[in-house]
Image (cartoon, rainbow, N blue to C red; front, side):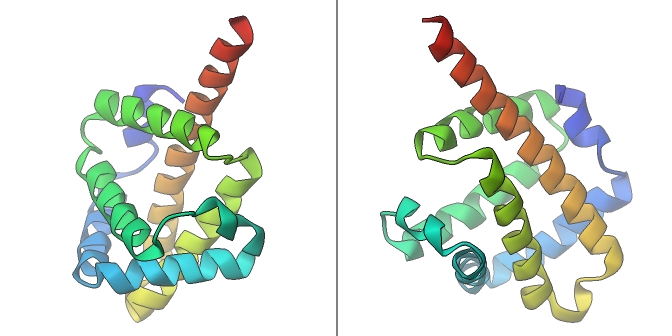
Length: 152
């Protein structure tokens, strides 16, 4: 995915919906993130050992990172670099390609639970588009890291 694809993968209305609903999540950030992790571990309990630190601290980091990524939507070059670096770091944590779908599912479940009736079909499509772009870019960063290590 090229840097412009991240922003172009979504309409302006979708970006607006993401920002609006993220503002609601951020008001309940602690609860939102804990709902995410609860759902993640329900779907895929084998991922729990990957989170060695305090889940409360990890929850704060999740909401902070989402906020940073959403704030960077109009800066696709910087966003692409950040996501590729994140993909490379997550490879080091043991994240595999198949984990991204589980995380996406947990994210959408969390959004549905926390946003409740404000999680409209349009909001679902917007967040799905954003997560798809994030996933593809992070995977590209992981592949680039793997390729570099193979060449050494």
